[in-house]
Image (cartoon, rainbow, N blue to C red; front, side, top):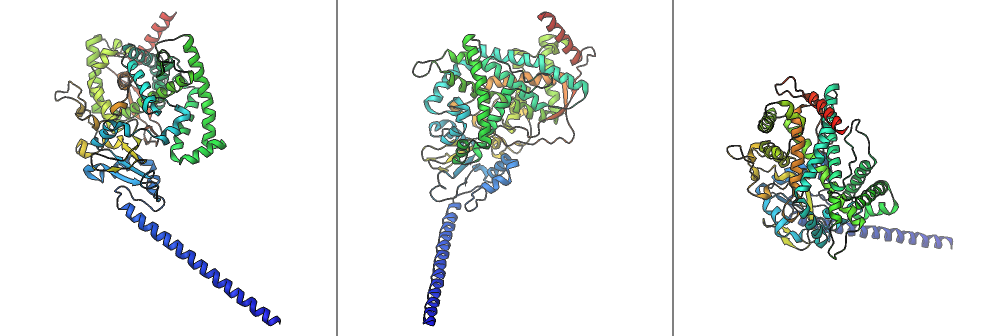
Length: 554
């Protein structure tokens, strides 16, 4: 009896083993079939792509991660590899149902494609829901983070203000005060003690003070002797950085972190509390005492329903202008000074032009040249300086790339099909580095390419979509003229007084961000510049100017 039971048990065990083996074999076959089906589908997908290598399940992300330290140059390399097409398509989510829409990215720098996206079919290429969601906590539905009617109302309101001479005068007033009372003093101190200075940090502080003054009439004085910390500035920087980190991850991931108050989302929340409190105070002060700043101007305007803008809306409007106005000019100036330091021939032309203009407007006494920053009319005559700044922005645009969301299926002028739900990234950085657009010398710094044959006039690009450092179409930067005014004021104020020398061994490297920061700053030595008059050194003039200012104030 026991033997029969044992035989039955053994038979059951054999059947179970055979069943397990069969199920395992079936699972293997199912997996093999799924993998082979996926790989066949993946092969068909990649045949339609012409960009960097795309990996199963990972897409083009491995290449992006491997080249993250040189991302913009990597994109340029990929675009150059396409020849005159200057366009490629890649996939970041090679998964069925996602790859041809949410996972598809079209990258281009072809001028006709840029014109199509930025102007001809403008309404089909908004910022899109992903970008707006990521920036909403910081910028709300301000002008730089909105589309449609919300954007249009703010755009029209701002356009009226940016064309006024009073706003230009306000920018000049804030800039000249920062230069004369702070920048010159700090550079004089560094010249005196022989220590290196991070010029990018000084420029960021200066432009931040200026844009704060222009936006809501309140100067945080971050550019002061000792370079003090500022709670609002630190919170604003932290909030911006935490917001940018959202773009690195899928939406559900940062939303989960936000709900749980983890990591960067926790820092963002705390930073925004400081920013909101500062902005609320600034708005309250401006309501009591309006001035000629942007915030005061927007307080007088009405929304589409005829109502005054609420305090929360005014706050987001102000923060939008703050974000745009702070980084772009300072980043452009950092690359300008770095480039000019390596091109003494260009530096000489710029200084010669400035001294020629000042001789004509202020006479031969060099002390009068250095007593005050250059004025409107003097700056307008510096065509070589504007050409050098334009050439800097061609090679080092402050915003190196931007991305648009595709609303409806479309075809770009070069024949590239872009389906609804996908994105189009236009590489502003690559536009200036394409031989098919700028010729064989596209990688060279040649300011003369922006001048007339006799060198007396500045000439913009014949095709406006060959140069989109200030964007294009309906979203063309409203502050373009103010940016040039500020950059020319600062560049002339520094070059007239000082020669800058890069610190030996200092590595200038791009930082991967929305703006083209220098990752390690710009470390320089400050040397005096002589204009042939031993009695008029920059520091002597600065001391004389300071004494005069103090006496007048007294």
